[in-house]
Structure formats: C-alpha cells, structure tokens
Length: 238
Ligand SMILES: [Zn+2]
Ligand SMILES: [Zn+2]
Image 1 (tube, rainbow, N blue to C red):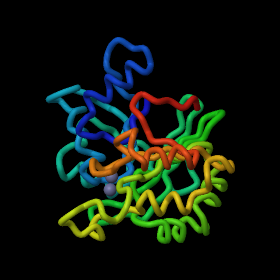
Image 2 (tube, helix red, strand yellow):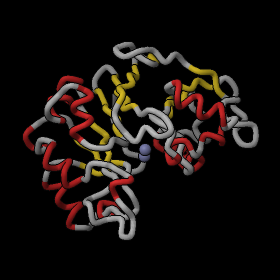
Image 3 (cartoon, helix red, strand yellow):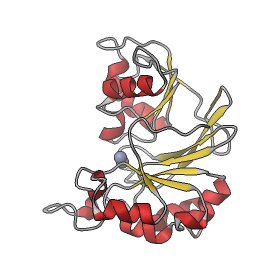
Image 4 (cartoon, helix red, strand yellow):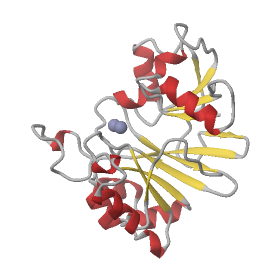
C-alpha cells in the first residue's frame, strides 16, 4: 500500500481506499511518497504522527528539499526516509511495482517538484499533478510534445495537472502567480484520445474548474476528445 501525497482529506481518503480494496478498516500505508511541499500535497502528513495514527518507521520517499521542510516543521517523527536516488534508478520498488521520480519545473519556491512514474507488470502510470507550463516541462525532459514524452516513458495512463480550465478563472487574483498550463492548452497539445497514446486522466482540479461538474459543456468536451476526468475510488490494474 503506497500513498502518493498526503492531503488535508487524508482520513477520509484512507477510508475510500479501504472501500475500494474491500477492507473493513482504513488503510495504513506501507510508504508515503511526496512530489513537492506545496500545502495541498503535505497538509495531511501530521495525521501519521503520535496525535493521530501513531505510525513509526513508515517509509517516506521524497526529495532532500521536501524532507528538510518536513524536518523543520517537526513532521518527520513517524517516518524513516527511503532512498532518494538519482535519476534513472527506481526510488522505490516493491511487490512488482516501481516508482521513479522525474524532476519537473514548478514554482520551486519552497521545494523542488517531481512527477512520479509508477510501473507495474501491465501498466505504467505517470502522475503529474503540478507543473508550471508545457514549454518549460518539455524542455526540462527533452521532448518537443507531451505525447513524445509519454511514449518515451512507456506510459499507458497519465494523471495530469488540470488545475484551471482557462485563464479567466481566478477573478481578482493574478493567475501568473499560480502558473499551471490551462486545460484548454493541454487539450491542444495532447493527442486526441481516439488517435491512440496513453489514456489521459485529468486531476488536481481547482474548485473554480468547470470540470468539477460532470454535466458542464467543458466536461463533455473532455469526453469527446477521448480523455477522462479523475473520480474517487477509480482504479487502474497495474
Ligand atoms: Zn504545487
Ligand atoms: Zn498542487
């Protein structure tokens, strides 16, 4: 049982996870993996500590900068750090599944940021919840289109940053301060689902994103383009 990211909804998510696996009590993960240290991704990490779950020696896989942020906030007590090896080495490998961290540019104000490639025997899933823009990301990984990159990774599924639908979404706030490629731009860049390529599953939706409403015209556009929107309890057999 490997948990990627610890959000503020962690207790509820551990129950959803248990239900999806047919277990009677909330899941206690064997390891926790973190992509970066922005609030929404680490807010639930304290739940593993003495005051709540009382975990000890839980494996934490995260970069040096993410770990040092947790250390400074005194949140490392439940954890032992797993290896965080350099690129092209699996960061964690257990039970036939391996996890590789891939650095991606994303407001490196507090920590660095990684995408995680999860490889099983049958399927390979790229988890990319946050990045600033496609130009920088593609330049950093060395490909000219998202599909070239996904194909080179052998990804069968991509869980992809879909924070904002478009640039009009945050009234009264400067959206350049929270850079993400918009879903409109991502749609223009990724290959139509009907033409092959990995299955694209849009995740990490801001509350303002019309994709939260399954009946919105925008949700319909995703469906027509042959992609999906992430839903709770949904599974991929690795
Ligand atoms: Zn972030
Ligand atoms: Zn985020």
